[in-house]
Amino acid sequence: MSIKLSHRLASQLVLAIAFTTPLYGQKDRDAKIDRIAVQVEEMKTELTLLQRQVQTMQETLNKGSGEMSTLITQMTDNISAIRRAQSSVSTNTSEATTQLSAMSERLAATNQRMERLSEQFAQLRKLIEDLPKQPVLAQITPGNAEQLFAAAYADYSRGNYDLALSEFRMYVETYPSSELADNAQYWTGEILYAQRKFAAAVVEFEKVAVINAKGDKAAAALYRRGLVLIEMGNKEDGVAQLLSVVKNYPKTPEAGLATQQLQRIAPEALEPPAPETQPKKQEPPQRKTRKP
Image (cartoon, rainbow, N blue to C red; front, side):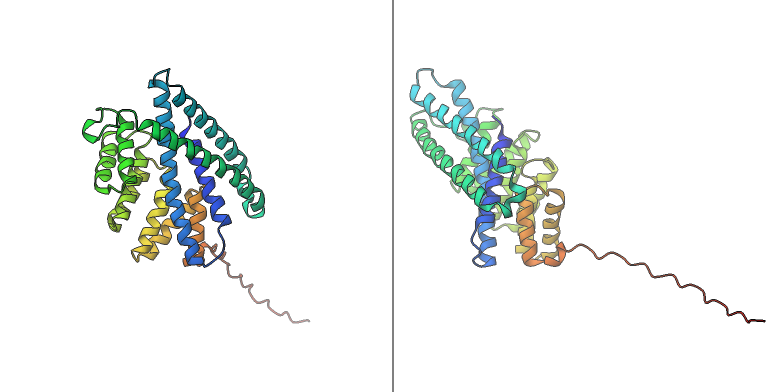
């Protein structure tokens, strides 16, 4: 299964929600968009873990577990349906402001599929509870990157920030070239922000681009770094980070969010520089000739 496609779906949901959010108070609206951005990043990771769990379970579960196999098949079908819906939505994102009605309908259909998927996920979770418990950190199989990442994200979701922080850092140190290394680094920054350690969070967000400047968390980390800098009172550097998101990642949802923030706090930063005008050359005065 492609992790990138599910991430693109979550990104489209951010844009759709941002465009359909009621215009009640610019500050409250921006705050809600920022919360949604973090929630979508969480959803991306949850979808990634879900896909990996489905793949692992399909390979290892007993062939006789018919009920489990049926649920997994239904979840796979729903994920495929969501991808098809995402593909349809993505063709219209550039014209979203003029096609909100059509996009809302697609979003509603996607939400219905997501609700069904959530219900099936709840059923699957109930069945998983009857299986042997997932290994804790001390019992993780050496060399199993997926187990370590899953344990770290599970601890983050439960609010065990200190443990999750150590696990995500261990993941980055042990598997720096893996596909999820930049994700682990991103969540390190989010944990520090949740702990109100803003300066440390800024440093960790910056490391995401060092690990993978073209990864699916590069734009999100740069956007979050800009917001944290502004929250710390460093508006100039924060605005520079948001402008970098718009310039270097123009097709991402974070670019749209960064533009909205800039329009609110520094609209002059979005105005193109005035063209330089060259002074007109003065022609030398012509000498008057006397008539004979």
